[in-house]
Length: 479
Image (cartoon, rainbow, N blue to C red):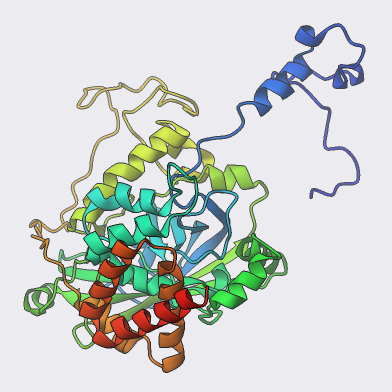
């Protein structure tokens, strides 16, 4: 809390009139409707919330900076990533995927790390998950996925049958689900997880040469996860475990940091790999790419007002800068639309004029609408083109002149899920905990859907299907 030697000033109404001490109570007072302080207070409380985010509703955030540590000018001309020693201010938001604002920080679900870089060329937003793959490539699945992870509309309870019904009908979801059901599904706080912006971005240097990059934020605190039992014990004591851990460590000047790197494929590499490198549901194959270090993200300042910094923040994957261009996959195109729409709904058409979202420099022909409007571009014409010295566009000669179009397959590919079980889960302990978590999620599922799930798990790997089936038989028999 704020600690000062004396009050910070005179209390006023929202219109600035000093408040008389007698107006701070309404007992035995016949002037309720003439008491502006009372009206200010009561009517504001009724309207002080903004709509809750549909996903990633519960989260926290802080300020920091990004420092360039390596020369990557060969690959991208983005100003934010060029010039060793250059520092760029950032604001970050950590979140848990499906929980509501009152939910559990360490529920078994994907966690988010969104970063806004306040660059000299506009805001750059990276929206990452703690797992390196996404759940689906087709943005039309956003609604079904979200609804299956929310509560049943009849019972208002979490419904594992709904989830597994969707998984068996859309098996492409399973690879991402496997990561969540493994040890990686519950990071030991936000400081000790990696983050992956998921998409394959097209990047270009000052000569217009194109490369393709996956960005990875690697925690410098050491990757650390919780078992289901450990998470249950913490949850019994503290639903805000990750939020508290982050805040306290920053307050103690134990500043969290992440190393930013990018996996690189050249344009020729793209044409020769035997997999779709733009498929967000699979990993790139080892040996087909190389990794380049870029810099460090350091978080070193807690916000002085949570609502102003965290709840009013708006991160949009479409916020890119010269030298970092749009990924060509269909999911990104869908996200570019829906993130803008949700910010307009939640915060208003001028959400980028809210302080935490405001870029260093912006000149547009958009004006008016719900506040804030700032200077509203004063008397500059509100149309383009014009003959009266309004802002004009630039010509970026280095921007790639060709556009890649990726045709994506609707076929179900179980190889990524199979590889996860066989190779990512590197020891028997990891495999057994993964199987135990699958069994736990299937126990309450209706028989018909459970059978479909077991058939699908057996197709992914016969051993996996057998072990999950055996675990279910034992668990059901003893409950």
